[in-house]
Amino acid sequence: MRNFLRTIVIILCLIIARTTFANEYPTVNVDGLNYILLDSVPEAYVTDNPNATGEVVIPDNIIVEGKTYAVTVIRSSAFMNNQAITSVKFGSNLWGLWTNCFYGCSGLTTIEVPENVKHFEGGVFSNCTGLKNVVIKNNNATIEWALFGECYALESVVLPSEMKKLPDYMFINCTSLKKINLPENLSEIGHFSFAGCSALEEITLDENITLIHNKAFINCVSLATVNINVVKWETSLVPNAGLEVFLGCTGLKTINIGSSVKEFHPAIFAGSSGEAITINLDTNLYH
Image 1 (cartoon, helix red, strand yellow):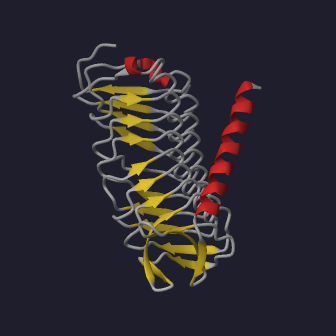
Image 2 (cartoon, helix red, strand yellow; image 1 turned 30 degrees about the vertical axis):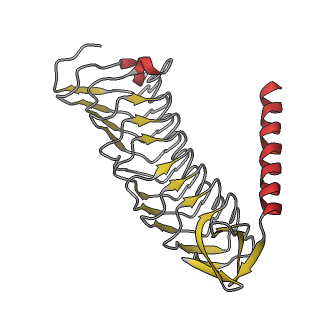
Image 3 (cartoon, helix red, strand yellow; image 1 turned 135 degrees about the horizontal axis):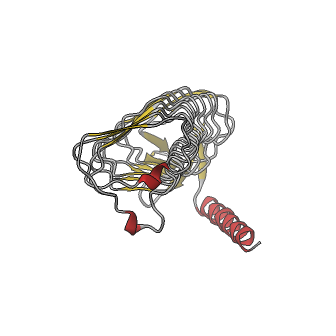
Protein backbone atom coordinates (compact mmCIF):
# COMPACT_ATOMS: atom_id res chain seq x y z
CA MET A 1 0.00 0.00 0.00
CA ARG A 2 2.83 2.38 0.84
CA ASN A 3 4.46 1.79 -2.57
CA PHE A 4 1.09 2.25 -4.28
CA LEU A 5 0.54 5.60 -2.55
CA ARG A 6 4.06 6.68 -3.45
CA THR A 7 3.34 5.85 -7.09
CA ILE A 8 0.10 7.87 -7.03
CA VAL A 9 1.96 10.86 -5.55
CA ILE A 10 4.65 10.66 -8.24
CA ILE A 11 2.04 10.48 -11.03
CA LEU A 12 0.15 13.47 -9.59
CA CYS A 13 3.38 15.46 -9.34
CA LEU A 14 4.17 14.70 -12.98
CA ILE A 15 0.68 15.74 -14.08
CA ILE A 16 0.90 19.00 -12.12
CA ALA A 17 4.38 19.74 -13.47
CA ARG A 18 3.30 19.00 -17.03
CA THR A 19 0.18 21.20 -16.73
CA THR A 20 2.18 24.04 -15.17
CA PHE A 21 4.76 23.86 -17.96
CA ALA A 22 2.06 23.89 -20.64
CA ASN A 23 0.27 26.85 -19.04
CA GLU A 24 3.47 28.84 -18.57
CA TYR A 25 4.61 28.69 -22.20
CA PRO A 26 2.54 29.34 -25.34
CA THR A 27 1.67 26.45 -27.67
CA VAL A 28 1.64 26.85 -31.44
CA ASN A 29 1.05 24.65 -34.48
CA VAL A 30 3.52 24.95 -37.34
CA ASP A 31 3.19 22.79 -40.46
CA GLY A 32 1.00 20.31 -38.62
CA LEU A 33 3.11 19.83 -35.49
CA ASN A 34 2.48 21.31 -32.04
CA TYR A 35 5.24 23.10 -30.14
CA ILE A 36 5.77 24.88 -26.84
CA LEU A 37 7.76 28.11 -27.24
CA LEU A 38 10.46 29.27 -24.86
CA ASP A 39 10.82 32.90 -25.84
CA SER A 40 13.82 33.74 -23.68
CA VAL A 41 16.14 31.16 -25.30
CA PRO A 42 14.56 31.09 -27.98
CA GLU A 43 13.75 27.38 -28.38
CA ALA A 44 10.77 25.23 -29.28
CA TYR A 45 9.86 21.86 -27.78
CA VAL A 46 7.74 19.40 -29.75
CA THR A 47 4.70 18.67 -27.58
CA ASP A 48 1.54 16.51 -27.82
CA ASN A 49 0.83 15.39 -31.38
CA PRO A 50 -1.84 12.66 -31.23
CA ASN A 51 -3.02 13.35 -34.80
CA ALA A 52 0.32 13.20 -36.63
CA THR A 53 0.46 10.67 -39.47
CA GLY A 54 3.00 9.15 -41.87
CA GLU A 55 6.53 10.56 -41.80
CA VAL A 56 7.18 13.00 -38.97
CA VAL A 57 9.77 15.61 -39.91
CA ILE A 58 11.26 17.48 -36.95
CA PRO A 59 12.66 20.72 -38.45
CA ASP A 60 15.87 22.44 -37.42
CA ASN A 61 13.96 25.64 -36.64
CA ILE A 62 10.47 27.09 -36.78
CA ILE A 63 9.52 30.70 -37.39
CA VAL A 64 6.65 32.22 -35.40
CA GLU A 65 5.66 35.88 -35.94
CA GLY A 66 9.04 36.58 -37.51
CA LYS A 67 11.04 35.03 -34.67
CA THR A 68 13.20 31.93 -35.19
CA TYR A 69 13.08 29.13 -32.61
CA ALA A 70 15.52 26.23 -32.60
CA VAL A 71 13.70 22.89 -32.15
CA THR A 72 15.73 21.21 -29.41
CA VAL A 73 13.54 18.71 -27.53
CA ILE A 74 10.72 16.23 -28.11
CA ARG A 75 8.73 16.39 -24.89
CA SER A 76 7.48 13.50 -22.77
CA SER A 77 4.66 11.49 -24.39
CA ALA A 78 4.63 13.80 -27.43
CA PHE A 79 3.69 10.98 -29.84
CA MET A 80 2.70 8.38 -27.25
CA ASN A 81 0.51 5.57 -28.64
CA ASN A 82 0.28 7.26 -32.03
CA GLN A 83 0.11 4.22 -34.32
CA ALA A 84 -0.31 6.30 -37.48
CA ILE A 85 3.26 7.62 -37.73
CA THR A 86 5.58 5.45 -39.84
CA SER A 87 8.96 7.19 -39.68
CA VAL A 88 10.76 10.08 -38.02
CA LYS A 89 13.35 12.47 -39.41
CA PHE A 90 15.18 14.33 -36.65
CA GLY A 91 16.34 17.95 -37.00
CA SER A 92 19.93 19.08 -36.54
CA ASN A 93 19.22 21.23 -33.44
CA LEU A 94 17.49 18.44 -31.53
CA TRP A 95 19.41 17.22 -28.48
CA GLY A 96 16.86 15.53 -26.21
CA LEU A 97 14.18 12.84 -26.41
CA TRP A 98 12.12 12.91 -23.23
CA THR A 99 10.30 10.15 -21.37
CA ASN A 100 7.99 7.92 -23.46
CA CYS A 101 7.94 10.40 -26.34
CA PHE A 102 7.46 7.59 -28.91
CA TYR A 103 6.02 4.98 -26.57
CA GLY A 104 3.59 2.64 -28.31
CA CYS A 105 4.23 3.98 -31.83
CA SER A 106 3.72 0.58 -33.43
CA GLY A 107 3.95 1.92 -36.99
CA LEU A 108 7.64 2.74 -36.66
CA THR A 109 9.93 0.12 -38.24
CA THR A 110 13.31 1.83 -38.59
CA ILE A 111 14.86 4.63 -36.54
CA GLU A 112 18.16 6.41 -37.18
CA VAL A 113 18.97 8.96 -34.49
CA PRO A 114 21.59 11.51 -35.59
CA GLU A 115 24.70 12.51 -33.71
CA ASN A 116 23.24 15.75 -32.36
CA VAL A 117 20.72 13.85 -30.19
CA LYS A 118 22.66 13.19 -27.01
CA HIS A 119 20.10 12.48 -24.29
CA PHE A 120 17.46 9.74 -24.16
CA GLU A 121 15.14 9.63 -21.17
CA GLY A 122 13.32 6.49 -20.08
CA GLY A 123 11.03 4.49 -22.33
CA VAL A 124 11.54 6.64 -25.44
CA PHE A 125 10.81 3.76 -27.85
CA SER A 126 9.21 1.29 -25.43
CA ASN A 127 6.33 -0.79 -26.79
CA CYS A 128 7.06 0.22 -30.39
CA THR A 129 6.01 -3.26 -31.39
CA GLY A 130 6.83 -2.90 -35.10
CA LEU A 131 10.31 -1.43 -34.63
CA LYS A 132 12.97 -3.66 -36.24
CA ASN A 133 16.15 -1.61 -36.74
CA VAL A 134 17.73 1.20 -34.71
CA VAL A 135 20.96 3.17 -35.07
CA ILE A 136 22.10 5.67 -32.42
CA LYS A 137 24.90 7.76 -33.90
CA ASN A 138 26.02 9.83 -30.89
CA ASN A 139 28.79 7.74 -29.34
CA ASN A 140 28.55 9.60 -26.01
CA ALA A 141 24.76 9.66 -25.68
CA THR A 142 23.25 9.25 -22.22
CA ILE A 143 20.48 6.67 -22.08
CA GLU A 144 18.01 5.99 -19.29
CA TRP A 145 15.81 2.96 -18.45
CA ALA A 146 13.80 0.73 -20.78
CA LEU A 147 14.70 2.50 -24.00
CA PHE A 148 13.46 -0.43 -26.11
CA GLY A 149 11.31 -2.31 -23.61
CA GLU A 150 8.79 -4.66 -25.26
CA CYS A 151 9.86 -3.85 -28.82
CA TYR A 152 8.87 -7.35 -29.86
CA ALA A 153 10.06 -7.06 -33.48
CA LEU A 154 13.48 -5.52 -32.72
CA GLU A 155 16.25 -7.37 -34.57
CA SER A 156 19.18 -4.97 -34.94
CA VAL A 157 20.55 -2.18 -32.71
CA VAL A 158 23.71 -0.08 -33.04
CA LEU A 159 24.52 1.36 -29.61
CA PRO A 160 26.85 4.29 -28.75
CA SER A 161 30.45 3.03 -28.80
CA GLU A 162 31.38 4.98 -25.64
CA MET A 163 28.39 3.76 -23.65
CA LYS A 164 29.46 2.84 -20.11
CA LYS A 165 26.25 1.42 -18.63
CA LEU A 166 23.44 -0.55 -20.18
CA PRO A 167 20.42 0.78 -18.26
CA ASP A 168 17.88 -1.30 -16.35
CA TYR A 169 15.19 -2.94 -18.54
CA MET A 170 16.94 -1.71 -21.71
CA PHE A 171 15.76 -4.58 -23.94
CA ILE A 172 13.23 -6.28 -21.70
CA ASN A 173 10.97 -8.65 -23.69
CA CYS A 174 12.56 -7.85 -27.06
CA THR A 175 11.62 -11.31 -28.23
CA SER A 176 13.10 -11.07 -31.78
CA LEU A 177 16.59 -9.92 -30.75
CA LYS A 178 18.92 -12.80 -31.67
CA LYS A 179 22.29 -11.08 -31.32
CA ILE A 180 23.80 -7.81 -30.18
CA ASN A 181 27.28 -6.30 -30.11
CA LEU A 182 27.84 -4.64 -26.76
CA PRO A 183 29.93 -1.42 -26.80
CA GLU A 184 33.59 -2.13 -26.15
CA ASN A 185 33.77 0.38 -23.29
CA LEU A 186 30.71 -0.96 -21.50
CA SER A 187 31.42 -1.54 -17.79
CA GLU A 188 27.98 -2.18 -16.27
CA ILE A 189 24.83 -4.09 -17.26
CA GLY A 190 21.67 -3.10 -15.41
CA HIS A 191 18.87 -5.06 -13.80
CA PHE A 192 16.71 -7.04 -16.26
CA SER A 193 18.52 -5.44 -19.24
CA PHE A 194 17.85 -8.44 -21.48
CA ALA A 195 15.10 -10.11 -19.45
CA GLY A 196 12.77 -12.15 -21.61
CA CYS A 197 14.85 -11.79 -24.80
CA SER A 198 13.76 -15.26 -25.78
CA ALA A 199 15.51 -15.29 -29.20
CA LEU A 200 18.96 -14.18 -27.95
CA GLU A 201 21.42 -16.95 -28.81
CA GLU A 202 24.87 -15.78 -27.71
CA ILE A 203 26.39 -13.02 -25.60
CA THR A 204 29.98 -11.91 -25.05
CA LEU A 205 30.93 -10.17 -21.80
CA ASP A 206 34.20 -8.34 -22.47
CA GLU A 207 36.95 -7.40 -20.08
CA ASN A 208 35.75 -3.87 -19.34
CA ILE A 209 32.52 -5.15 -17.79
CA THR A 210 32.94 -5.25 -14.01
CA LEU A 211 29.37 -5.15 -12.73
CA ILE A 212 26.34 -7.12 -13.87
CA HIS A 213 23.16 -6.62 -11.90
CA ASN A 214 20.73 -9.31 -10.87
CA LYS A 215 18.67 -11.14 -13.47
CA ALA A 216 20.18 -9.19 -16.36
CA PHE A 217 19.52 -12.12 -18.73
CA ILE A 218 16.65 -13.82 -16.93
CA ASN A 219 14.48 -16.08 -19.12
CA CYS A 220 16.64 -15.79 -22.23
CA VAL A 221 15.55 -19.32 -23.07
CA SER A 222 17.43 -19.55 -26.42
CA LEU A 223 20.73 -18.34 -25.00
CA ALA A 224 23.09 -21.22 -25.75
CA THR A 225 26.58 -19.68 -25.47
CA VAL A 226 28.09 -17.19 -23.04
CA ASN A 227 31.63 -15.90 -23.62
CA ILE A 228 33.18 -14.41 -20.48
CA ASN A 229 36.27 -12.20 -20.62
CA VAL A 230 35.48 -10.27 -17.44
CA VAL A 231 38.66 -9.75 -15.42
CA LYS A 232 37.04 -9.05 -12.07
CA TRP A 233 33.49 -8.87 -10.75
CA GLU A 234 32.89 -5.87 -8.48
CA THR A 235 30.02 -7.57 -6.70
CA SER A 236 30.75 -5.74 -3.47
CA LEU A 237 29.58 -2.45 -4.97
CA VAL A 238 25.93 -3.52 -4.96
CA PRO A 239 24.37 -5.98 -2.48
CA ASN A 240 23.83 -9.38 -4.15
CA ALA A 241 25.03 -8.01 -7.50
CA GLY A 242 25.79 -10.65 -10.08
CA LEU A 243 23.45 -13.27 -8.62
CA GLU A 244 21.04 -15.19 -10.85
CA VAL A 245 22.18 -13.24 -13.89
CA PHE A 246 21.15 -16.13 -16.15
CA LEU A 247 18.16 -17.40 -14.16
CA GLY A 248 15.74 -19.28 -16.42
CA CYS A 249 18.20 -19.59 -19.33
CA THR A 250 17.19 -23.18 -19.90
CA GLY A 251 18.92 -23.50 -23.29
CA LEU A 252 22.40 -22.67 -21.98
CA LYS A 253 24.93 -25.21 -23.25
CA THR A 254 28.39 -23.61 -23.40
CA ILE A 255 30.30 -21.20 -21.18
CA ASN A 256 33.65 -20.03 -22.59
CA ILE A 257 35.94 -18.41 -20.02
CA GLY A 258 38.75 -16.37 -21.59
CA SER A 259 42.42 -16.11 -20.63
CA SER A 260 42.00 -12.64 -19.07
CA VAL A 261 39.55 -13.91 -16.43
CA LYS A 262 41.07 -14.01 -12.94
CA GLU A 263 37.92 -14.41 -10.87
CA PHE A 264 34.70 -16.26 -11.54
CA HIS A 265 31.46 -16.46 -9.60
CA PRO A 266 29.40 -19.57 -10.42
CA ALA A 267 26.41 -17.92 -8.70
CA ILE A 268 25.76 -15.88 -11.82
CA PHE A 269 24.50 -19.08 -13.45
CA ALA A 270 22.28 -20.11 -10.56
CA GLY A 271 18.91 -21.26 -11.86
CA SER A 272 19.95 -21.52 -15.51
CA SER A 273 19.16 -25.27 -15.30
CA GLY A 274 20.39 -26.24 -18.75
CA GLU A 275 20.39 -29.99 -19.30
CA ALA A 276 24.16 -30.12 -19.86
CA ILE A 277 26.55 -27.17 -19.64
CA THR A 278 30.11 -27.34 -20.98
CA ILE A 279 32.61 -24.94 -19.38
CA ASN A 280 35.72 -24.23 -21.45
CA LEU A 281 38.57 -22.70 -19.45
CA ASP A 282 41.43 -20.77 -21.02
CA THR A 283 42.74 -19.40 -17.72
CA ASN A 284 43.83 -20.13 -14.16
CA LEU A 285 41.18 -18.66 -11.91
CA TYR A 286 39.70 -18.77 -8.46
CA HIS A 287 36.15 -18.29 -7.27
